[in-house]
Amino acid sequence: MSRQKRIWIPNRFYHIVCRGNRRDPLFRNATDFQAFLHILNQLHEKVPFEMASYCLMTNHYHLQIRSPEIPFSKLMSLINKRYANYYNAKYRLTGHVYEKRYFDKVIEDKEALLEVSRYIHLNPVEAKMVRQPEYYPWSSYYLFKYPRAVQPSFMNIDRLLDLYEGTLEQKKAKYCLRVRGDSGRREEIKTKS
Image (cartoon, rainbow, N blue to C red):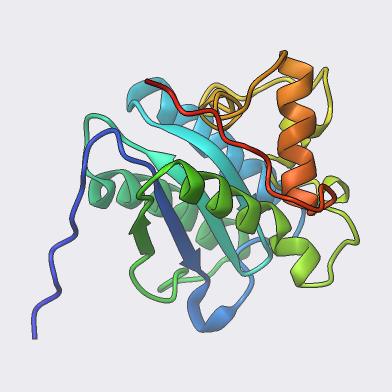
């Protein structure tokens, strides 16, 4: 039975998840996490893509990503192949690093864009690795939480922040409230005409 062809809609954000083979660790230490982020930076110099959020867990990762020029099948092949080569060389392994093809789902609207990002940033909290999303060092949440955080070239947090009204600081505060669920009510999303 052949695999179903992936649907790619240029300029639409997708939620992508990729797991380690047999749910084994993909990232064993800080150097592995840093290597993955370095690969994203390197690829971004050659292949246009942007992320609104990400979270690298121990045995899987989440990306909220869009690719305007090349299909995700090609982009994910480049990302995963480079990281698998790094991982196998470092740990003197052979064979599959990833469990199977990555999961992907198109993000349909502005509300879903925020909800997927919230889910991604709360992943380490739900896994009981940390108590608050800002305590987890391998997600993009710090870009929203800390005013002086330097945004990697592949990130574009404005895609999420532009859904809120106010100054940059106000938008970041509203986003963080939504992620943490502290607001008691959903923030109003600014609709662009």
